[in-house]
Length: 207
Image (cartoon, helix red, strand yellow):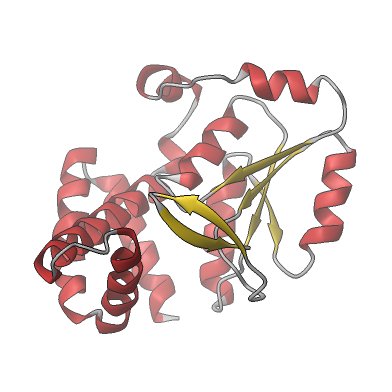
């Protein structure tokens, strides 16, 4: 429950403050969280060690701090979704190769959109939905129902319909048959069944 109120307070600040100030405050708080987030720091450093095997501990700490700051800025963008409309998209967001979506949808068989936890994946989905595409996204439900409802409401208000993990296969097939777009974040392995691919000159496991 505490996390829910933290998110709502964060949303209040993100909407009340100018964007640059909200980013600054989020980055500042992220640095404070970095000091106490022992578990998150350890996991992040282990992942970065795979990507940067020759980096020093000091370099990995620098990259880790930047990752914490960037994630905090991502949350600011997520909290500010209600300010995002077609006018804002046209003015601030560059879109390339949308014709590929149009070409596949024209075949009437639906679209599977595969992405990763890279950049602002939530913003990408909202932008596509705001452009009028029938967009669904598979998401892992949060353990806290109020937090989960808050996150899903943020997406739904901007046209992104959520398919919860657990019922995803059947619902995905249903939406694809309706010629809708279904988005998957494909870089997380829940079942320990892995395919290895080359990325950044290293081998990584993907579900």
